[in-house]
Image 1 (cartoon, each protein chain N blue to C red):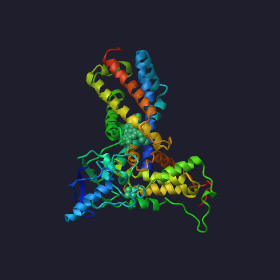
Image 2 (cartoon, chains in turn cyan, green):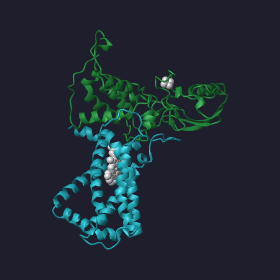
Image 3 (cartoon, each protein chain N blue to C red):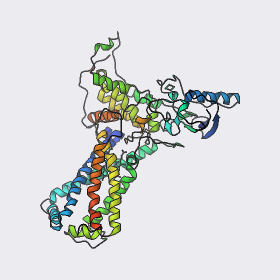
Image 4 (cartoon, rainbow over the protein chains, first blue to last red):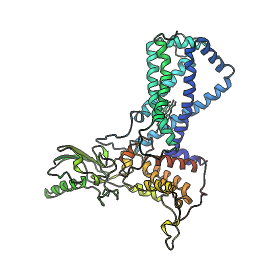
Length: 219
Length: 257
Ligand code: HEM
Ligand code: FES
């Protein structure tokens, strides 16, 4: 491993972003599957939670450690690349007509900041229960979810964050495979069905929970 | 046809510049953008004003010198063409057209629309070559090259080093240029003996020149007059990973030409 060369370069930093991003995508998919158990009732969701915090406790901490490292690596690289990229064009164009960049690709940075704020709030909300928009009890995940998402602004906050996640993942999923060196041997950059489908599934799978609770489809 | 031009005028490196308005009148729709600029410059000269400095040479899309940001698009609105291959019929009569130099830190403005693109030459000097034995030239078809590799190398080799990729990139990255050169040589037998040290050296030099990183916006590929694919960037990244993360050394048999 030629580590100093690798980590100093724009290509190395981008590869760090791709690997850490994909680790987080893997987690996000597991997390979404876990959440969807809310539709199977209180017993099912609370049993799952008890399993994670009980028998799977050590694995949970290992996973958390991996995620924290991935998050730090991702955010630090994003910051460093942003600084390098900004410096590369000190004088802006009077007029610039973008021809290929998508809303998703152009909002990676601002969307990333939204996600970072969301991740902090989300952990303070359900994990540490430091923030209690509604009274939350330890161990009763199901009731905590119901109580929280009956509040309109909590639901709205989560819905907005998941839109940011969907856009971030639409570009991120497409881009990361290229960062990691997978090529298709074709010119057209707009055919990205796999990234769109995955981003949509992740968006829908997360958004449906707060929305269903808010509209009393789950109680 | 008649046009209103708003062109960046700057007397020399480091001096302040500004957009200045000019009228281009009686322009043939068949005129290329550079010929239109020639007409404007002739009129300026007759009036005793300083003509607009712009780079040009071949005027047939092969030398890569006619760098211009036209209406916010590198080489103008058409796909797969350089400024010299852009014709005035592509614009509406009476249109106002903005013309700016490439805006990249690594391409300092020399004068008006002329920028210094030697940063790209220095990336090549860092490793974008093969080491070849001197002596009698071998027959070109002496070394077998698989068809697919030959095609990929040929597509990448179409790069004329115009700098449009970096000019169009929201991050000011010359990744497409660097990747095209790396892909070109990495696909061919002659490129193998130096394949991994080449990618390390060229990427390091790309960064040292102050270009940004790739976010895969895809702007470079649209701007490229040779329509080089961003797949070359994926190729560069893969070789870069092999060379750095896996510390791969060259061992594939190659051949010098
Ligand atoms: C926590 C705050 C976050 C910030 C500040 C952030 C920022 C960014 C930025 C700026 C990029 C584009 C980098 C570039 O190409 O220059 C990016 C790419 C990416 N992000 Fe994030 N992000 C965050 C969270 C996440 C999360 C939670 C996930 C996954 C669930 C994720 C997945 C990805 C992926 C897959 C990429 C693509 C990497 C590549 O193109 O190679 N990010 N992120
Ligand atoms: S003048 Fe040579 S490419 Fe345009």
